[in-house]
Length: 186
Image (tube, rainbow, N blue to C red; front, side, top):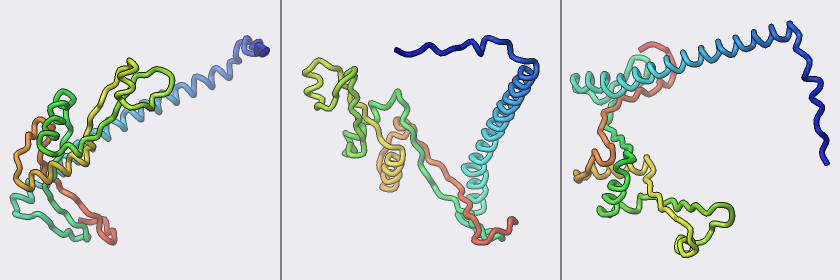
């Protein structure tokens, strides 16, 4: 039999000094949380600025100048390349998986069998599980990098691809490589 802990020591009112210390720590926590929120907001703004520079401002200006690559004075290299991005919207996931299968690309689809079997062993095959009266679901997904490669290959071959179905878009993206020896100047 376990003993009931003695909480009698906690019944006494805390001293004024410890309440003051606690209030100070609470203010410190509040200040730290506010600082983090401000930094998170600033980081979001910075991320948007970086994306604008990478995907719009620099590629657009380099295109106007007829450049796809340039070496900078500090040894850095600025290049622009065409990239594809995709994220299958949940509402179009089934149609996107069906399209991949119908176009001979079903091998990039990953299947995850999810079984709601409660507690106990769930290592049997789907057929056995369903025969035993359990519900089974076959979730299908394509890893984002695999989808990106498939899209890049199809677009390079000039193939017809339903971009909207896959939430896909093409972006020209600037990359800035670091100089071998940092001088800090551009």
